[in-house]
View 1 (spheres, rainbow, N blue to C red):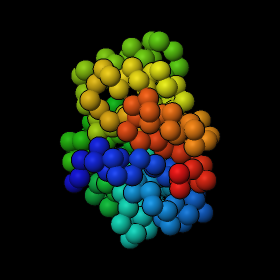
View 2: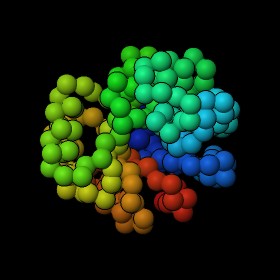
View 3: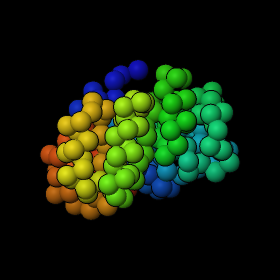
View 4: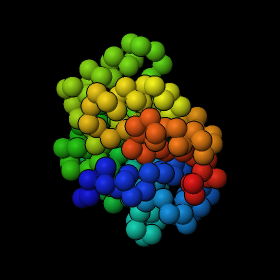
Length: 187
């Protein structure tokens, strides 16, 4: 499996898809990584299969898949019943399990105040996910602070509305950005 930082270096825009229409549009872009933000236990394998058919990296936002729990067995299910390259979750136990299974494990965190920032820094001292997705992605000073204080690749996600937002997040130290805005997948 390729180091995720190398993937982000080559393709820093991540297409985050919420439905089949967005999925088909994302598959036609140059985005190397697709975050899957929808699906059910019955459909996720087919969604991932479509992404893998066009040689892209499929990362499942496991918290959003209907029918899966927040227990480690959910990651085991994704690993054994799909061809997903990794998962993203707000739940640290699921991210840890993905890393244990040699999958990409992305930790999604919402930085809403200084306590959340301090908690995130503490978590990064005790656990190293494959990448950290920071929400919202428009808090550039926090991205810079986290970038300078750790070596985990950062993904800025949420509220990125313009090309300028993407460039600002990357300039602040994000390795990549994730967005559902299709017009930004070709930036």
